[in-house]
Length: 353
Image (cartoon, rainbow, N blue to C red):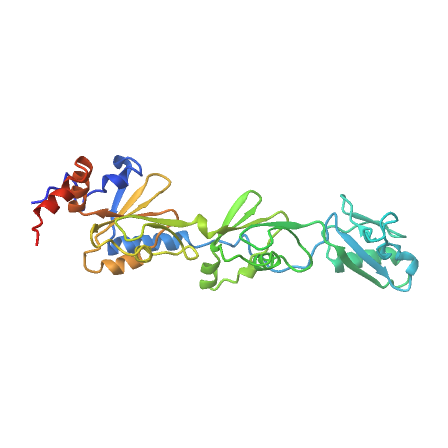
């Protein structure tokens, strides 16, 4: 009979795995069973139920704010349109255009217009500003016909970072800055982008967004409207890896597919359990949690194990570990105590033909 050197075949993690985690006294062990899968599925569904109600709102016209530059035309009165002179060239450098003229909204939200004086336009739409200015000029001009457009959008902006082609600041203009509009203005996502890990930071609060899940639930991502000062970050797929080690054919770090990877897929991409040294009854998943590490164990030799492995979804940074058989552990221990002795003994016992 081959000695096992004190290693259990299924009751506890092997020492190589537990040494990388927390102390066994504070580690929770769970068997992967149909009941556990059902509970995990319910917990994941509750956790992934994104509440984006604070981020969605109806599309509204652009509101003028301090810093914007307005183009104002009073038809049939060219003497009032001095703010619309075409861009002039710099006297020292003719090739460099000077800033175009217009009516800049100051820090108090006011513009200075002939005859009308100081007009507060912040918070108004173009139509609202036109109506207010027309009421002021009506004292001096009969039925003034006025056109107001925002010539330069300088008051509102969002910052887009991460896995996009053109990260940086994007101004908010008359086209409503939705989630998809912001991504498109940044040139779209890179192939390395993880669409399931988008973060929107607003007023110091982070809102995680899982784009594929929103589409699956029938929620239009364009209903998420960005505000001035928002920070949108698209994370890389490299930040959500799963590590497969132990007795598999090809231990490696695996990249999740938009936040999704099952235990069966992880083992398959690692070449499967090593048939010469792996113990299929001791497949472990080590997962970090807020309180204590959790270790899940799957007996891959049990009936229906493959179906359970396919239904068990992994989280980013999970460690999948396949333990060695008792015979493999015994062989390795003897080889470390007596290097080369075991192979020499086997060679000596082999009859010469």
